[in-house]
Image 1 (tube, rainbow, N blue to C red):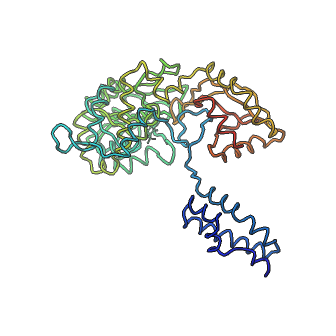
Image 2 (cartoon, rainbow, N blue to C red):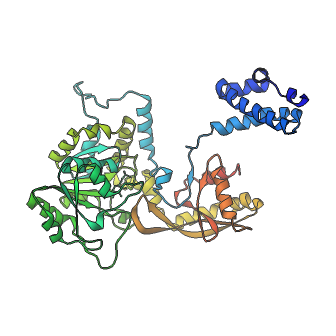
Image 3 (tube, protein in one colour):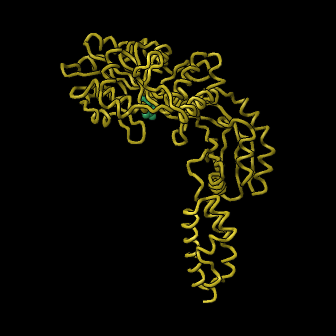
Amino acid sequence: MQGFRALPSADQFLQSRAGQALVAQHGRASVLARLRQQLEAMRKAIHAGADGHALAAQLPQRLAEALALASRSKLRPVLNLTGTVLHTNLGRAILADEAIKAATAAMGNPLALEFDLDDGTRGQRDDHLRGLLCELTGAEDATLVNNNAAAVLIALNTLGQGREAIVSRGELIEIGGAFRMPDIMARAGAQLVEVGTTNRTHFQDYENAITPQTGLILKVHTSNYRIEGFTAEVDAPRLSQLARKAGIPLLNDLGSGSLVDLSAYGMRREPTVSEAVAEGADLITFSGDKLLGGPQAGFIVGRRDLIAAINKNPLKRAVRLDKIRISALEATLRLYQDPDRLAQRLPTLRMLARTQADIHAQAARLLASMQALLTPHGFNVSLTDCESQIGSGALPVDTLPSAGFKITGQSGDAPQQLASRLRALPTPVIGHIRDGGLILDLRCLGEDQALTDALKPL
Ligand SMILES: *Cc1c(COP(=O)(O)O)cnc(C)c1O
């Protein structure tokens, strides 16, 4: 009995100096909820024989820790040292400063989203980006939706509902998260007509499949895998000729869809959106937050009459973009009007274009401080070459030579243990495990200090 009396009541604690300080920081409701939990746990411990006075003395500290932990968001910024630049699980593209400023302004202010500042009449939210998209891609018209999955869905539904959609068996891909082409087609109300085989599809396969029920031909950029060896596919220019002759539209889903030629930045050439437009596809879909380097969004560019039909589709309202992202996208697309400075201003491109020598030099600068931080914990830190990935399914088999640290420890599971401790930091540091070590690839590290600052609380 004696032990229980050592504990304060909830009210007594809330009146105390320690209680008042916690209420000022976290609010009364949160403090009370955690306080009750702590008191309950302490009563159980006393019941089991623990010393009530000792527990009571620990109460302010324990409660402060529990509250700090509970108020810490799991959605907090991390350091992406995985080596994957467009990491879907880490939120894909980092926005340019210009885009962040535009988004921030849109968050805190009313803006002329659907309001024409020239004549004060109602405007269209997509109009802010239409001109820019047409200028950057050479397309006749453009519209935008929530992401590229939505772009594919609404395009298929608009062109193919109740009709047939022809697609090569080599392009019936799964993008991840249960987004499979055949399923999405079924949901869009289009009947899938598969042609060709997994590795080879010919012009005649498409030609023979065209019937009066055909609503569209779909071409999918197989962005997340590559078929090699004995293969054949029909390229977009020939498909577009066929589609034109038959009077049916060709939809080309580019996936990542870069607006610039990546070979200028040391990567393999990917078809650009303007090339896809020039090749004659009637509609082209691509993502906002993959190689383009903007916020999550899906773009559809192409023929004016088809874009108009998409905009009239009732699904459009369900997949439209909000003002924050429209603002960020506009600022991002404007950067593309100045290609000379694009790689400095667009973080995605800047990270992708970093040379191994530059990354290696950064790792060498940081080596001594990394060793000073980690050696006392029993870890061994060394410089290593590594391979970065672009990510988000873009150029899946291509890697970019990179550099960073390999961290090992005495025991076999030391890398896993360290990885878990780095994830628990206030700014979690995310690497990957390879060859018995934790690899921190520095390709996506900005300032040197960001890493040492993140590791300090270790
Ligand atoms: C990534 C991808 C999509 C989906 O794009 P999200 O913007 O992630 O919705 C669709 N098609 C292809 C070919 C892709 O690579």
